[in-house]
Length: 68
Picture 1 (cartoon, rainbow, N blue to C red):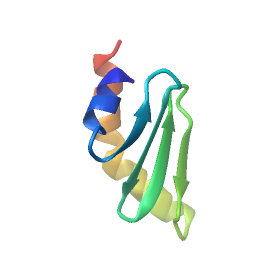
Picture 2 (cartoon, helix red, strand yellow):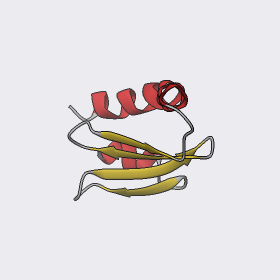
Picture 3 (cartoon, one colour):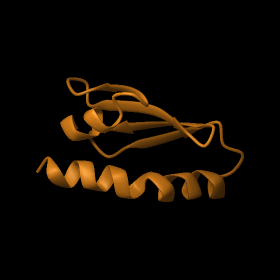
Picture 4 (cartoon, helix red, strand yellow):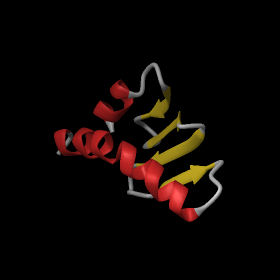
């Protein structure tokens, strides 16, 4: 979570203590939780949400893999 918060420092809001990161990508709001839950807001369909998450997946995976 620490690395993810550093990555998002200028692009969104993040709280290591709470384990929550929020940012906007492609006009959609994304909320990531330490426990793995992901919320995507302002999308028109499930397919759009999946496409947005595919785009940011690599960044998130790298952040969490470095924290282990």
